View 1 (cartoon, helix red, strand yellow):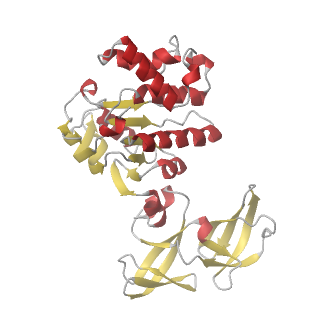
View 2 (cartoon, one colour; view 1 turned 30 degrees about the horizontal axis):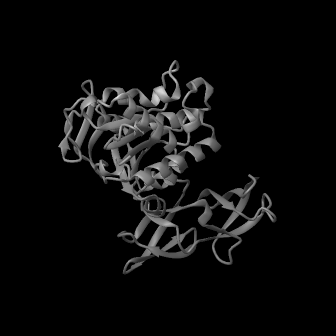
View 3 (spheres, one colour; view 1 turned 90 degrees about the horizontal axis):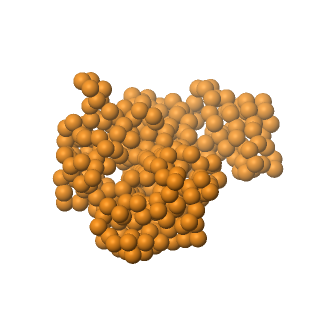
Length: 356
């Protein structure tokens, strides 16, 4: 299937969606999704991510602004006239139809004869590793297999854009990991443009070329998984993408692009990120706190939890509590131990005090 030749970019220009007279679901957003990339819309419930996805699909119409898929302005087009396919959270398979009939269903409306319909459906099932299951009913499949049937059904239509709405939320943790890897592999192999909605940060980090973090109907930050993890724009993004300790600090001096900060009496140098002398916040991932360091902040171990591959610690400092992890499970820190906690050379980032 030559899906990659049809993959198209998606552009939002000043798009707003208002329900009724005053419920703003999406507020004046601009974004560009490159052809052949997997872009995730990530955010808490009610942030506007699903409404944004449904506007791409044509299931919701924009109140203001324009939406382009490829060279076409699709703002006013109904869902049937947009070259997109959607994979729903509920799979939406027909229970009385076999796997082959489910995957063939949409092709029946696309002008293909029976022979070509069957060939394309078989090819789609092959792509998702379900070639041997074509005669089974959905009820005879596991949750992960049903999800793959839904993916195959969307793929065979060769859409310009493939949309996923929380596709893994009905699966258990182990299966989620497996199916997300399969979705990512298919997307990369076929060069598909995929827009993927989730509220699961780990899922977003694992599958995406780019992540659009949404908050309160707007966009908080757009970037690659590593950009967002290592250089969050503000407190919300730092806290939402992975876990972060937000620690108060003082910027005592600026030298070029670097800042000298004071954290609970401990000096540390890191990129200034355009900030000036004064109060700020420091975002530190739990893995970037150096336990039993030679120099650092004085803390007391309040909780120590063994979770198999690592230890998790709650530490009490002068400014409050922080969460730290360590892969040293053989010699864990004891509760009530007084320790010195340093900061990793890379990782801690400054955040403006007034964000969040």
